[in-house]
Length: 436
Image (cartoon, rainbow, N blue to C red; front, top):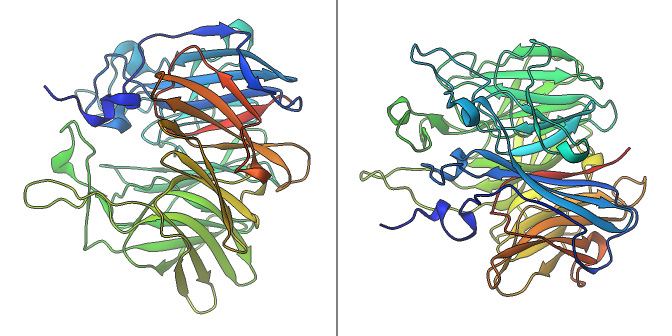
């Protein structure tokens, strides 16, 4: 029997939760880095799942302190699905948002560390001492959150507010915008009218606007319960961007058509006078099924969309024709002009100068595959010096390292390589969470 690709190689789940201290290091961990590097990803506890997106969430964390790699640990997130086998829909069809995998992202806001998946509530984790990465439980903002929560919320660096949305599948409203204040209180929830249930994985935030993406990957009831993703490409749905002013959160959403495509991940967005500039990883299509049910593979490339609020048009430009994914910026520039962005492509990381188009690359070498790279700042200057942190799998040893690169000199050898006691499977998203 052939093993499914999402359960083979470095996509295969690990079976143990490990704790290791005083990790060996090649090079020198920067003394300025004190905190946790955390990354989330699917790791089915029964070593089986119908799709890569479905596995139980597992957090992999490395603790750095003043030049030392203090510890590594990995922990499954104890959702109700993990512990009790709970389903998003019970036998009567009722929605249970405390069920889910919590397997996609991990963020910090208002003192809480949250593991996220877009189908349900976030789950809070602790970072305290010997209980670090243990599960606290589901978080619904004191009962005020009544929808699922995207795995890609945005924290405004100016206000400290957390902007996010939830999307529905079988139930309306199909899209709901939320905002939590800097103290973690959910203060705004409003429905956004869209014609169908689409897979809205990410969105865009600027200093003055929220931009939603209504794209033609739609929920298919016939695929629900099939063990695979219940979404398909729909040529009849169209593609458009919805702009909401942040100072009028219950006001009109203006819609701007774009060429049909799909976007899992946005790099960043910012205002430019009467224009909004978005940088996204664009797929020409996704999950188009032929008469036999098969889907063609397509790749994402870096594009820029410029929305002209006066003319009601969008200029669409491809900035790089090479496949890549997992775009990141210095998070202190979320919603603001950022000169540099970073993407992952095969065995490399790329640093894109969004002003000049210049691209620098770090090649990890044969058989060494990085994941998403998070930016860790070196000083208080947003967009200034810093490091990129990523887990890298080595096929020759079947082990993984935490690799730290100088973001301003990406082609240089790693600043430090922290050798881990085991393998970190390919996963999704994470963050550098510095101590404050």
